[in-house]
Length: 235
Image 1 (cartoon, rainbow, N blue to C red):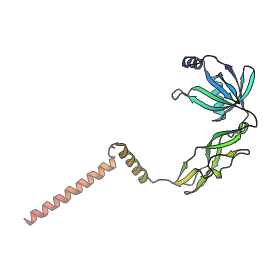
Image 2 (image 1 turned 180 degrees about the vertical axis):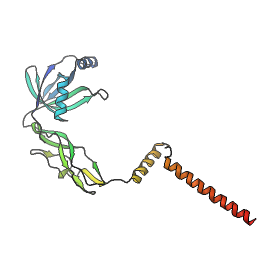
Image 3 (image 1 turned 60 degrees about the vertical axis):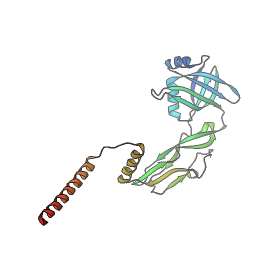
Image 4 (image 1 turned 30 degrees about the horizontal axis):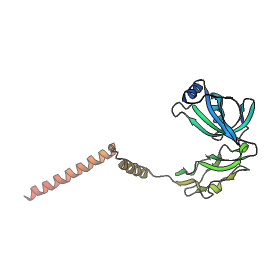
């Protein structure tokens, strides 16, 4: 899926730096950012918070924005986004300046479509694929159709269908999707027990395990009583 047109955002130059300045910017519902590339000096700017958040949400991990700063407009590719882990607010963004027709290296997320065959487990070994693409034609994601695929099916990077103009940079033999047999309940429980044992976790017995243990104890008592009765008769 190709990138939509770059979203336009008006930015403001900033001259205040440091944690205190950044907090004041965020309290005003704005986002501190830096724009660099093509031999230019890094330019520190402030972006409107909600508008920027929506632009990144719509355009994905490699959002391309048209930033207007002090009357000048640049195409800026999102390079790094820092998000508050608790409040989920944008804390800071790094942009790199790009030009139309320019090739850039990006990691594009894989999106699975369809459902594999029943009783299978789908393992996504590579959640992103590194490609080279034109800055204005970066795909939002790379679709991989797994509809009806049986256990044993493997999809390699070389099997992916890339948008026109994009070049695969990931190793063509890299495993992207692996379809395996779904584990049985017994296998899951055994793996869980092994993991708990390695972690030193003592698990309380289940009702079923308690009932089995009680049944075994009862059988043992009955057998012992039977032996005692036989010995008594012999005496």
